[in-house]
Length: 288
Length: 229
Image (cartoon, rainbow over all chains, first blue to last red; front, side, top):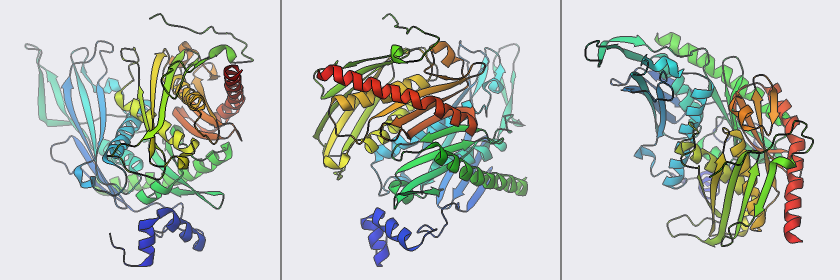
């Protein structure tokens, strides 16, 4: 981390002060040059992991996330004989261990929180129907393991992970399973790959807004970087489905909000997500 | 342990019948409270402010260490350890914004929350936890900027928006909202909403929730007055 000029020194010592002085001088942009409502450039890479059933790598600016979908066969639980299992895990490999913010435990906690959010979204938006994971009722079901590896955390992990999930699921191919009638054991045909059927219509995408207080007014920073997430007073996540229905709103404490502000943030979120969706479609048209 | 189920009354002009609280049930802690909201019961205790352990960063504000454990063995199939972590992290931001943390540099408080009974899904227990937390901090005399209260609202497929639902309605509902209001301006301090809904429903839910929050604040006042008299 270079501390050559005055600006970087100030950033290193007191991030809050740096942001305050920057916003005093420039009224509508952030220190990294973006406007408040602008998102970072998105890069998408899919189908690049050899051993997973589906994979994708997403870069939102500097934040890099790899999503990998694998599956195992399991016996269904007695409570629901037709349901498969889904497990989402967000991992932070040691490439992130020595970043200057927070202790390792805090980072681990944030990732557990994110894993749970993603699982909730999958269930609540019915993105993946547990019945679709059934191979033979009462005997064999798929247990989908969805792993997210955050190679570089520069803020806004929630958006990138959800985007990566959407891209990965579009290209997930599961091998065909036939049950041998004599031995009742499953036969896995790894060469006959079938596209995974999921509820593609839903497409939940998230907009993360960091709320920063400047001169008694709230500034909404969309797609925050790591620094912006640290100085933000509170963070708001909006997860919208394709038909503009809201799937999840999660607001952390710190800034009292009236209902009008929620409406404001909703319109910002909708604009941002429309941009994300067109990005998703364009990338996949190019690569299909 | 026998389950304590609240009585349902159809014309709920006041919600005081579904609220019940015991302050300082745990005498050794700096502050503690047990709170009942419809069919959910939670206990919370606060220890501190005390000394900071060596390994943690010596920051210039209060360090908050919060632990939440759901009741093991309850038949809630959606409960996982990561869900507890989510609730812990959310409540931690609540504490950081409420307690005047700059007054206690290089100290920490330990908060332990237990869920004693949870017959319904997710909304009521989350709201119960927030309210228990607020009462505990009031009981421990921690300096706070404002008191806060959480209200659970669910969206039932046939009955519409219900506030402070009973277990049967909550388990049948499709979306839920938990709003945390603060006492000064009655604005929404924090929120967790999940399901499938639009902004109009959210607005209606807020309108239903605000008067209930005011009643919960009245309840806090009554309980604290009882204690100090």
